[in-house]
Length: 354
Image (cartoon, rainbow, N blue to C red):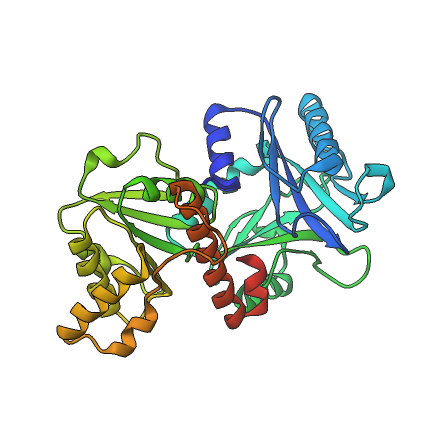
């Protein structure tokens, strides 16, 4: 997985001009949510704001701005998704167009905060005529254009951070003339998956998860089984002691066991079930395999009620087929389903971000 922060960092390294297109606000039925980004260069496009004529028109506007080397004075543009755009959604999207060159001063701070898993809010003026730059706000620090907000407005932004609110357009004062900003919360990714096994299904699952906002720790003792092209959201752990990675995983992790050895699958399953703090544990195999593992673990003292925490067989129901790619899609869907249910139970707003 890459995201817009990674893409901007790579473009900066290459000194490649670009325009960042952000869904700043929406009304009614629209293809993507507020905060969605697309980065446009002269030749490439990173991400999507939903496709269709809206995206084609946004790309054209962005490339015109790259040629002109500036965004227009009115960088916030309104797009009704009706007949004029050939789209039948019927909603309204406001898009913010920003020159990527303006982003470089605060990008290092944002990269550091993400590395340190510190939540923050990116504050962007919604008018290109403003030359104040951007502000990065954390619970106790600010980075970038410190004079962009007064103390009262800064307090309001931090309240949004504390409430774990969603991206939104926001005025820093009363009245229509008050400065308008786009507030974009950046949350650490807590969708952590530990995958044991680099066989056919494991490799297919990694491909399915490559563009999902998650972090995967991929564990196997066989170095030769790992492919040469590893997605950005995957960390390889080649070890003869995979059980140690069960202990190393954070609370709330998602575990998947699909190694080349039934004995190792059983040992990992037992170790995982001894934890009481994981979000999901899936074991590849049949119902017969599950029953065999349960009988042996129960003889070694595992309480029978713990087996309810083990998902086996894995994958959402209703998808037949045993091809690795088919299994991987069903398993990835199950992970996302479990994730969405957990986030929804915790917070309806959080479920929208998941």
